[in-house]
Amino acid sequence: MHLILFFLFAGLCLAGAINLLLQSHPINSALSLIVVMTSLAVLYLLLGAEFLAAAQIIVYSGAIMVLFTFVVMLLNAGREERTLGSRAARIVGFPAVAALLAVLATLILRAHGLGAAALNQGITSTQDLSRVLFHALLLPFEVTSVLVLIAILGAVVLARRDPDEPSGNRERTAAE
Amino acid sequence: MNFLHQAVPLSWYLLLSAALFSLGVVGFLIKRNLITVFMSIELMLNGVNLSFVAFAHQWHAVKGQIFVFFVMMVAAAEAAVGLAIIIAVFRARATLAVDRIDLMKL
Image (cartoon, rainbow over all chains, first blue to last red; front, side, top):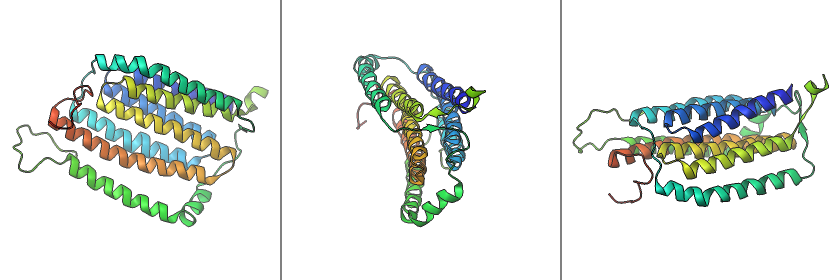
C-alpha cells in the first residue's frame, strides 16, 4: 500500500514539477505547483508527519499559492517570450544541474544505514511536535512571529501606491 | 499480497527530493517570467523540506519536522515580501520579463 501510494504521488509530484517548467503561461505554472505541493503533503503523511501534512496544505497550497495566483491575475501576466539570455542560461545551466543531480543521486545511493518507511510506523503526533516546539524551541518560535509581522509590514509598504503619484488607472493595490 | 506490505526505501524519498530541487534550479534558469522564477524557488524549498521530513522519519527526530515548520514560515514571509516587490517592479516598468529588468535604476 505504501509503495503504491508513494509511486502514485511521487509521479504526480514530478509530473507537476515538469509541467511547471513546460507551461509558458504563469497561471498554468501556478496550478501545477499546487499539484506538487498537495502531493508532497500526502508524502509527508506517508512519512508520519501528520501536522506538517496539514500545514503544507494550509500554508503552501492554501495561502502562498492563493497569493501567487492573485498576483498573476492582478498583473495580468501574459505568455513569456524566449530570448537570447534564456538560451545562454540553458547552455551553461543544464550541464551544471545534471552534474548536481548526478552527485546528489550518487551520494544518496551509496549512503549506508538508510532505513525504509512503512505504513503505521514512526508517526509523529502533533502533541510530540508541540511539546518540543513550545519547550525547547520557544524563543525561535516567537522570533519567527516577529519575522512574519515585519514581512506583513514590508509587503504593505512595498505594494502601496505612492500617495502623491498621479494615479491614472484605477487598479487596486494588494493591501491584504 | 506481499507487494501491498512492502516498505519504501528512504533513499527513494531522497532521490525524489533531489529531483524536485534540480527541477527547481532548471526552472530558475530557463523561465523568463519573474513570477515563474519565484515559483521555482518555492519548488526548491519544497524539495529540501521533503528530505528534512525523510531524515526526521529515519532518526525519529522531531526537530527535523520543526525545521520544516520554520522553513514554511520563512517561505510564507518571503512570498509576501517577494510578491510585493514584483508588484512594485511591475508598476515601475510595466513588464515582468526578467531580461528587461536588468538595471537597478530606471
